[in-house]
Length: 86
Figure 1 (cartoon, rainbow, N blue to C red):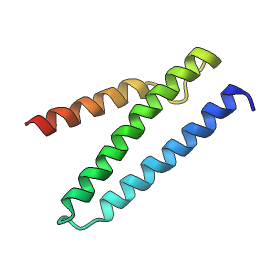
Figure 2: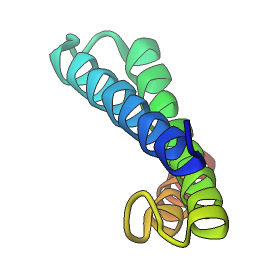
Figure 3: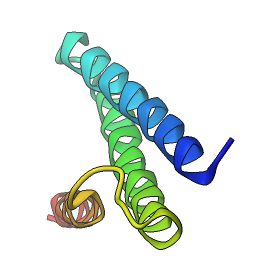
Figure 4: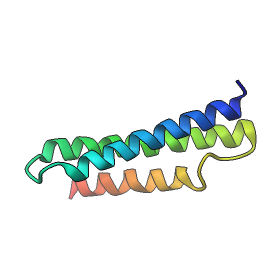
């Protein structure tokens, strides 16, 4: 399989993981704070991984997996860090 295909497959898997984490977070009762925080962290890690994958795709295939995903992931991670320190 070509590198472009691998990057696309991994991107689809990451999107699925993020969607599942979001759905589960939204369906949890408000009292499940620890679980909600864990699922938010999963979403942030997926954004970070997608940014890495996007950089890989741009370097090796000339195209990104999702436009500006690296920037969006970095912003989401930074926002979470600021929220945690506040």
